[in-house]
Length: 230
Ligand SMILES: Nc1ncnc2c1ncn2[C@@H]1O[C@H](COP(=O)(O)OP(=O)(O)OP(=O)(O)O)[C@@H](O)[C@H]1O
Ligand SMILES: [Mg+2]
Image (cartoon, rainbow, N blue to C red; front, side):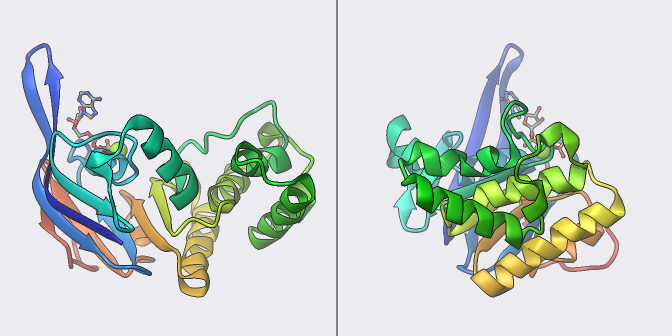
């Protein structure tokens, strides 16, 4: 599903170039649930942005579902993201003036899906995240965990092969965090969606099949599971 080779990302700062991601190679198979862990500033979000085609590498190659991302132009990358990926962020990023149902429908509407089909898909998605009764409410009327489940439903609208999540439980209390993790595990096991999740939280990482550890922009381990982190 994901194959990177000598992937690097260097930012040009006033103080000079800063390499946030050092030459790294990584392989993630279809159907895997991966947790990316590592200290703050180690390059986790940078790696996720490259995998998601939100940013371009400075050098190296990255293939996602058979598509070489570094060879796409901006328009092609937008299409790639819209049709193949789902994104979930720490701060949910729901549109506050739209209802829950409208938020979930966004990418379907952008893709000119017929109205009746959108309505059916939105009900199905909201039922799957256990929020069928909230479809007419606004994000501000929901708890953090409920908002994150709306964000997950939205991310799944286009039936993506790959779900990318950056600290999806970072703003949630334990109970809501566990509900979100259960949902991600279920989507992975039952729908076969490949998931790459950045997390600081060992308990969240335990939901994954495999952990990719980053340190100072370098992948230091791709098998570590459980035990103590320094
Ligand atoms: N757009 C940017 N311009 C300049 N430097 C950046 C940019 N994005 C990230 N960096 C730098 O790259 C490094 C890695 O950042 P990144 O956001 O990937 O870390 P992270 O592992 O996600 O950290 P956290 O756990 O705090 O979210 C940091 O030192 C950061 O300052
Ligand atoms: Mg980050």
